[in-house]
Length: 189
Image (cartoon, rainbow, N blue to C red; front, side, top):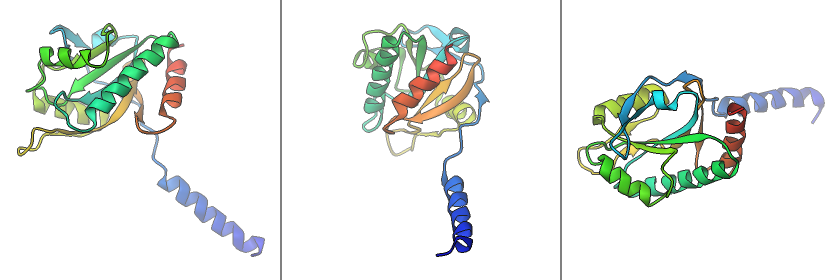
């Protein structure tokens, strides 16, 4: 094949690759919130001021993704501790009717012995968390009427010290820990 015919093919391949790649997470400011943590104490954006934090959405009677997600979050908690990085972890329940502070406290104890920088939040209605997740993290939360399981996003969301969502990570990606660690180091300087 001659070079004249190869150039348009290469251009088409490059355009297709870029159009199929996922776009970068747009930087979005997280709206102010105050909910209840696993100790029944108010906790929100004010307590996270000037802190890098990682958020996810889980619920305690989840039969699928929540236990591995929470286990992975516990691994991240340990990883950041070993790298001496000040990071807070925030797990919003996607099922606030079931997940009381006491329920979340028992759930947290299954995954971590150190809750000082990990907050499991509840104290809102199902509609409030659905709107909050959609508006701030552009993710879905939906509890079908016919099930006790909740449909929700499975990414980890990285929020910078200024309260802006800067990136999201799929916990099943092979390189996500390396990428997340590098990004956190950049934002905790």
